[in-house]
Length: 452
Image 1 (cartoon, rainbow, N blue to C red):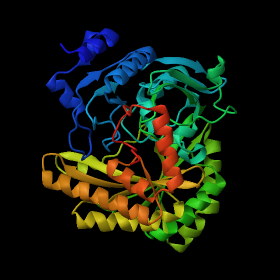
Image 2 (image 1 turned 90 degrees about the horizontal axis):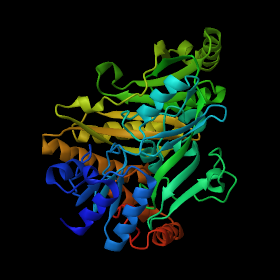
Image 3 (image 1 turned 90 degrees about the vertical axis):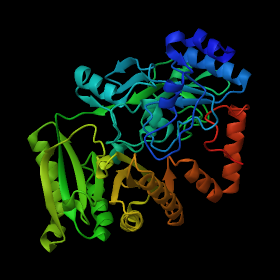
């Protein structure tokens, strides 16, 4: 038994460390098109102290450490590109505190969004958090590490905007807290202390998030979805502008996809509404349809596709079903809302070139300040030719999005390099200084966000 394995076993226990091929295989792949990359060890810590001790040992051994949440990024961001230790954080799944009056909860970073939703439904049904459009196993910490968004993005922004504090294990092993909790106070605010936001969006390259104070928001008794449909993609930005102006929707998503056929070349604007009474809901509908959308109905350029549908949480993509052997990966980008028509046409073009049914989606972020736009490419996991076509489509989309002025969201290594090639030189140098300062031995998720 080698010394690293023995050290890991001493820290987390024999049952929570492995170097067996069949178990490492599970961690060598994610759900997208990335090639397998094998760790040498997998460990599942239970506490921040155990994470700290593992990171200290890894520094001594100059071993890579790759934090893993739910493994749902689809972009290879938690694969062991340089071997080393994969840290599976899913055992760190305790809900530590619920402060109903302060509208926040403190959780360990490995807790899943599904568990948070279930806990609030049972213990505080009048509160909710922003849930991403991912399977329920997606973790809180993992979503923050990629600047995720959820179904409250329209009024409140990115999920990484909805926190009151963090606990992080630094790449050298120290446990650090940010926000009011750093003063020994309750976890009620991240401001107004000096900004130390060095951990979100870095995909675990600057430290391992271990605890989060998650902001909660009012959960209305009735939640329903209305659908407005247009054929002309050029109308979508102005319609979204009108909808964000009245501020009645909790979530605004636009989707167009080749499958099923009724969606092909049409643009479905999904409008999530919530109210504590029927009167409140109908008031919001009146503002939306009678005042903002009536023009399009009267002109015949838009119509009501559905009204009063139940909202499922989470809303999970079914795109993996578009091909036999279900698999998919997508390029995400943060873009202006006015980008939608061009983004739609780009998705249709690239998908057709690779014989993939097109799927595009846009989610309004922060009252229309931006939009998360995604281009999804399905493939058959058992057919390498379709995997190769999907991979080529992803790379082409990365390149075209940057040429069109978009900002790639949670890009794979290919996209990260494109981003850094275009980045202001002083900004890129600052990223390098931050990474070198925090991670002098270069052990944290190496291969991601590396500045040459």
